[in-house]
Each structure stands twice: as structure tokens, then as C-alpha cells.
Image 1 (cartoon, rainbow, N blue to C red):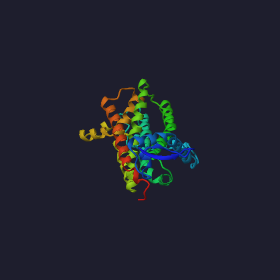
Image 2 (cartoon, helix red, strand yellow; image 1 turned 90 degrees about the vertical axis):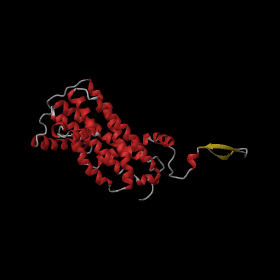
Image 3 (tube, rainbow, N blue to C red; image 1 turned 180 degrees about the vertical axis):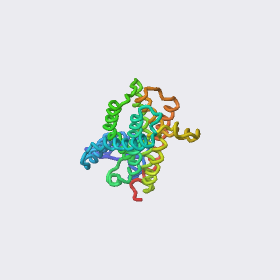
Image 4 (cartoon, rainbow, N blue to C red; image 1 turned 120 degrees about the vertical axis):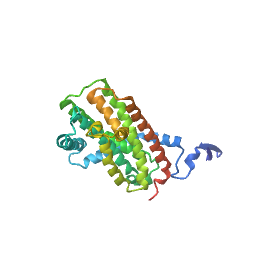
Length: 295
């Protein structure tokens, strides 16, 4: 702790305790506990910033919020025509429409968080230089914004699954969507933290992420069954370790088929979530002092 003197009405001076970290160099990284408290105090700012960006994006489009629903629906329709009808990957998959829609909708949420995270620091440079705040608020805002965008999409998904045949096998397991979604959100938040710092250091990383997204899409079993199309046991096992494969399968088992997901799948889902969010946050936190500097 440091002290400073203040004058009273009688002219005497009394020492006032001031936290030593607050007297440091401007932009210096504070201790982790202090950093987390500062971040928590700005939770309302994060929410309102995310909400304003959702509204701003919608206002720039003629159909407004309609594109939040149309984009995944049109993408799902394209995948259904190509993979379901032309390539016939639907063979052997019960309720292929629901299988495909769950894969497309939830995978796109992850990809938007990941790609948005790569630009979080660079797109927020003006705010960084104008205000003092924990820079981790920027990638968090990206994820909160995409979760807000996803809410109407999820409602449309529920309507589509309830209207189009065959009907899903609804059981109490639908509530397991909530912990699975929380795990997926923590996982992509960790990715956003990690890529936000990389995006600050390497501007071209967004191009690499876009290429990686193509491989990730096919490795996650979004529109085909890994068991049917991947025969090599080692490759099949590697694809099943992929976190998005696990999240999508848990959603499908819980919503469509009404069956329990294997314990190993849940363990991987929780493990990926907490390992990535902790590692990603600490990696981002270590670079806190560099984010306001020009590259």
C-alpha cells in the first residue's frame, strides 16, 4: 500500500491509504485478482456494448434481424441439397434434417465467436486508446454478442424441429442442452481470448483461421456420420476428440434421439471448456500491456 497526504479544514494533513497497483504506470497490467474484479465491474458495459453491436449490425441490413435466422436456414438448405440429396450422406442417419440443422446452427455459433475473436483487439483500438479498462472485455463482448445473435436462431431451430417430420423423441434429456451450451460457450470464449492476442500480434491470422474453419467443419460431423464415412480407427478417434463433435452429438442425443450421451463425451466437453477458457484467458492476460501499442 502507498499513502498520500490530504489537508483538512484545520490545515492538518492525514495519510490516506491508496492501493499501490493504482499508482503504477498507465496501461500496466494489474495483478490477476485486481484484473478480474475490474472485469466484473464492467459486466454491464460488456452487455450493453454487445447489445448495441447486435442492433447496429441489424440496422445496416434491409431485413434487419431477419438475417440472423435466414443465414443459418439458407446454409442448412444448401448443405441438405448437396450432402443429403446429391451425395446421399443422409443414408443411415435418423431424422437427417434435425441432425443437419443442429450441426449447422451450433457450429456457426462457434465459428462466429472464433473469427470475431481474431479481430477483437484490432477493431477495438480506438476504445483501447481512449479508455482504461480490462482488454479482456473485448473478446468477451464478441462472444456475448454472438450468443445474443444465436437466441432467435435457436427459437427457429426449435420450431423447425417440431414442425418437420420425423418428430424428435423428446425426453427429460432436453435440459442437458443447457450445460452443453455453457460448455460450448466457455470453450469458444477461450478460443476468442487466445486468437484475440494472436490477431493483435499477427494480422494475417484471420486468413489462417478461415482456412482452418473448413477443416474443422468437416471434422465435426456437421452433415455426415463419422462412423459411416471414416473407416480408419485412429482417424475416427481423433475426430471424436474434436470438441465440436462432442457438443453436437450431445445436442443431437438430447434433443433428437432422447438417449444418454456417453460419459467420455461429457468429460471431454467439460474438459475442453475449462482448459481452453483458463488457458486462453491467461494467454490473453499476459499480453495486456501491449494491446494499446501500435503494431
